[in-house]
Image (cartoon, rainbow, N blue to C red; front, top):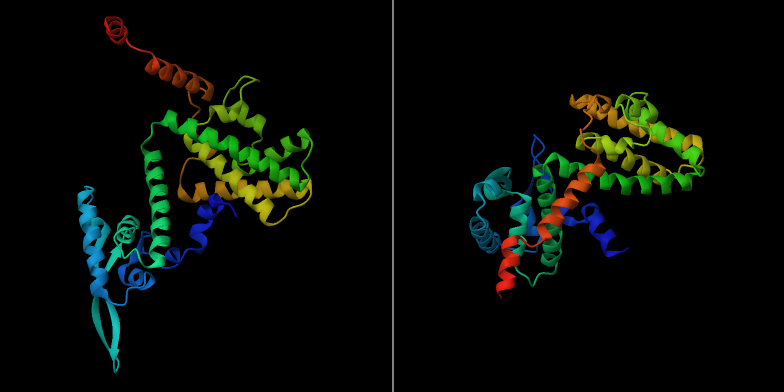
Length: 295
């Protein structure tokens, strides 16, 4: 397994993921007591020192300490059926990252924790950054992702027996029909009022691209996981995954793909505009040129 695969698979086998908890409304957290045991701390008082250091680091990073270190109590048995409450904290992922950074580095599992929470925290940062991007930038990113996923899906389909271009076109239509309520690629093309040489993926907004990316990813996984063989079974698998994504959108009360707006500009137009902007930034200004001549 490569280092990239190890990082990708870390959430499935990490002991830190095993002690992750969720509130009733689905927010994740870690119990400081659970984390202290996993990190090999025999005494809570010593772990409290690391907690205070982590809280200070959180404060220095201009983050709200109370939002990442929520003090709580934990009931434990005290003998003869009695119970008592002990101090605990509900920790965010970022709080855990700061904690393992301030934990005893001589404990081997601390290094594993540092790697795990650093990777997971960075993933969350990237996800947060994506939500703040303007629509045009999101479209460019998701269209690029769609190209990668389509290549991966094509490889999986080929392994299942979808070899000829005409067979792959039919295979793709089955995925679209599942996601778009029976519409084939040509139907979607017509609804968007596109010219014959225009690609439908280049005229999707970021949400429509995200839905198609999810459809392609699920189909690839299903074909590989179930070792699907034969064109008909591959088509059926793709159709099922398209329907599954559509059902999820319906249950969420969100806009269905066929009803999503068609952007005014194609991906190629956005790429061209971005290229011009980069070229303009890289060119020296008139002031810079005058200054260079004076030198």
